[in-house]
Every structure is written in structure tokens, then in C-alpha cells.
Image (cartoon, rainbow, N blue to C red; front, side, top):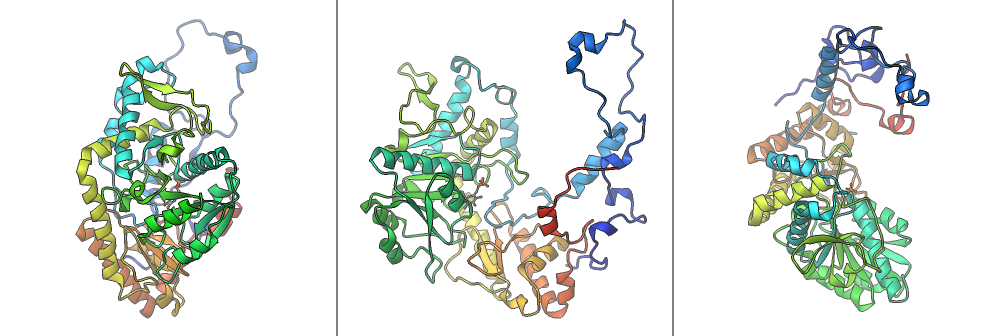
Amino acid sequence: MSPRASKPAATAGALRNSRRHVSLDEGLIFEKSAEGKRGMELPPLDVPPVDPAEAIGGSRVRDAISGFPEVSEVEVVRHFTRLSTWNYAVDLGMYPLGSCTMKYNPRVNEHIARLEGLASEHPQHPTGMAQGCLRILWDLETCLREITGMDAATFAPAAGAHGELTGLLMIRAHLEQQGNPRKTVLIPDSAHGTNPASAVIAGYGVQHIPSDSRGLVDTARLAGVVNSDVAALMLTNPNTLGLFEGEMKHIAAILHERGAQLYMDGANMNALAGIVRPGDSGVDALHLNLHKTFSTPHGGGGPGAGPVLVKQHLARYLPVPVVAITPDGHFTLDRDRPLSIGRVRAFQGNFGVLARALAYVLAYGPGIRQATEDALLNANYIRKGLEDFFDLPLSGPTMHEVVFSDARQKKNGVTTMDIAKRLIDYGFHPYTTAFPLIVSGAMMIEPTESESREECDRFIEAMRSIASEAETNPELVKTAPHSTRVGRLDEVTAARKPIFHWKP
Ligand SMILES: *Cc1c(COP(=O)(O)O)cnc(C)c1O
């Protein structure tokens, strides 16, 4: 494999290159505008004209929007089609962005979510007219309870972090009901970064627990810090090092003995579904990321779902409304729940995501276990293929993702970011860089179950080739990518001083 490596890194300023066809060098749509260009021509009016100000009321008529692009239809179509070819997508190749589970999702689930009766359903339909949709929620809850070993669920939260907040508010309500909401949430240093943020928003102080030398929760240390101020431990499992926290039962016992709760961040259920049921290990509340494990594609900030599943003692605090069954067998929405934490979102959450998730679970059935095993196999296959070329900071068996560090390549000045950018030249989306924070120069790789052995081999070959480039030609790696329309961007300026507004 030898990607093109000739073009020097472009800067944003040197972006336009007149020798390249415009399809490789697309500008802004505003730049194509010329006065009078139209996307369509209407025939001359053959009825008496209506004065818009009279018809809809003068104050509602807006002036022409100044500076709006005037372009033809084909220009609009080509503009957006060209931009779409600049994207990397899981439909093009492997997307090993660790912690994000960027897997390929079967198209049939998209089809289901778009079925006329589901896509056009309005959340304010009376429940008598929405029995089918309520049944989807009910059935999905039944399936996820079985998969997680929990007792009850809410689908309201729109994302994983939103689920964390919802779960913690329920834990808070439960402890308050017992007389004292407590003050602190414990979070291992290998947790996902959203965990401390959610704890703070839920009104708790955060205390970090350092991992032991295996990269796992240090249970002796934990036992030393759980006291009557501790509300809960938030445990990401598998943790962000891609390692399984196998002592969940023991951890739960330490917490429960002192009246604290165990919250599990189950965003990475991709590594557990069909094999481990967190509810069987003493977890009191957890969230899932349906947009990671259960079929909804993500990456553009689009709709997600972070359902929270709880054990019976927390069920009365679930957000309202809760899907229930009446004695005569009809589905209904129960709003009469005096101890509920209230609403966390409008209606029932993102229904299309929930419909996809049910389609996914029903299509796979017990095959979910194999999807999980394939995700673990792929990550371990890549780990084996790369462990002689990159530094492996922790040696425990890998779950669905593997974390290397750039320690070996750093000797030649090549960092995790450089290697990630160079991967683009080989046709892969970069892995996750510099996360988890507890590994310096982290390279977090999650192939997911979607990838064939051939694609994993191509990835391993690309990474080995970059490792050798880092020895023989570090400059090539440090200035990557070389094959893209735009070279390395100034990400700090892009984040700190974004320009959202085009000016002529
Ligand atoms: C992705 C992820 C989250 C956050 O989920 P969002 O839907 O982005 O809010 C939380 N925890 C873990 C372990 C994750 O991987």
C-alpha cells in the first residue's frame, strides 16, 4: 500500500488551486451566486395578483433576504454532492474511532424507522390511536431489560450524557427519600469524560479514584473512601482503556454496604450485550447509547437515545410519562407518579432511534451475542497485529477497543495526532487521539464487529507501514495528511475563533 505523498500540506489560505477541477476544490455556495440566477422558472401569472401584505398581514411579510445566494438547480446539486465526497463515512471503510462505536448498521433498520406509520406518527396522538408505537416502546423496554438484567426503563434521554444526568437525578431522589441526598459521586480516572460533568450538574461534588496497575478500579482504595457522604460510584464498563471491570459484584457490595448506589455507564454495551447482564452484578442504574450499540448511525450530532434502566427500588423515580398496560390490555402513558423526577425531555424521546433499536434487537435475536464476540475478536486481532509496533501501556485482555500509546514513535517526534492524520492518507478514518487522558499519547482503536478480517488486515498493514515511516521519514508523517483536499487545519483557532458568517 502506498498512498500518494507528494503534495505539500495545504494551508487553508492556499486551498484554491486553479489547476484542479472545481469538484476537488469546492468553494462556498455564496461564491457561485450571480444576480438573477434561478433554480426554477414559473409560468407567467394568469390570475389577478394578490398583495401579500393584504393577504397575510403587512407585519408578516419579510423583505428580500440580502446576500442570499442566487444559483441554478444543477449548481446546488453539484455543490452539495461535491461536499459529500469530502466526507469519510462508514459506508466507505473502517471508522475505528475508539469509544464511539462507529459501526455499520443494517439498512433494514433504517427502512423500518422510515415506514409511513412510524415516521409520520405525531407524539400528541391520543394513546388510543398510538397503540402500535406504544407497543414498540414496551417491546423495546422488555428486550433491553432482558439484555441488561434491569427492571424498568425510560427512553426520554436524548443522549448518553443526558442518560447519566437522568440516572443520577433518580439516585439523588432515592437518597433524598431516605433522608439525605449525600454529597459526592466517585468516578474512576478511567471513566468517560461526561461522567464528572453529569455528576456536577446533578449537584454532586466529584472525587476521582485512581486506577490500579492493571488499569482497573482499585477496590481496596474504593473501600477506603466510601462513606456516608458518597451517593454513588459511576463505573464505565468496559472502561475507557478497553478493559473489563470484572469485580463489579464486589464493587457493588462495597457501595451497598454503606448505602451508596452503583451507576454503570453502559454506553459501550457493544462489548457486553448477550454475554454480561450488568443487573446481575449489582448495578442499580445504567444508561445505554442506542446510537452506539443499537443501530442508529451517529457522528453528525444527530438524534440519539440514552435510555436509562434501573432496578426496582429506583423505578418510582423514572421520568414521566411511563408506558404502562391497563388491566384490559391496552398501552397507556402513566403520568400519575408522585415521586417521579419529572420530565427530562419532550414526549418519549427520539422515537425513530427507538424503532431502529427494536428492529436491530429483533433481527439479531440471540445473534447479539455473536455481534459482541465479533467486536471483541476484531479488537484483539488488531491488538495482536500491532503490539510489536506500538507501545501497549496495559497488558490485560482487550474488550471491544484497544489503547496503544505513541511512546515508541515519539522518540522521532511523531505523535498520536500525526499517526492519526497519516491514516487518512491510507484511506482510513483516524482512531481516537489523546483519550483516555490517563494514557499519555493515547491511540484508541475500536474496529467494531462490522469489519471483515480483510479490512482489519488492511488497517494493521497501514498502521505498520506508518510505524516504519515514523522511523525512516518522520517528516512525512508529521505533515500528513497529503491526499486530502485540505491539509492540517489549525484546530485550536477553529475551536476558539470559529467563523460562522460569510461576508462578500
Ligand atoms: C459516548 C460515550 C458517552 C457519551 O454519550 P453521548 O451520547 O455522546 O452523550 C458516555 N460514556 C461513554 C463510555 C461513551 O463512550
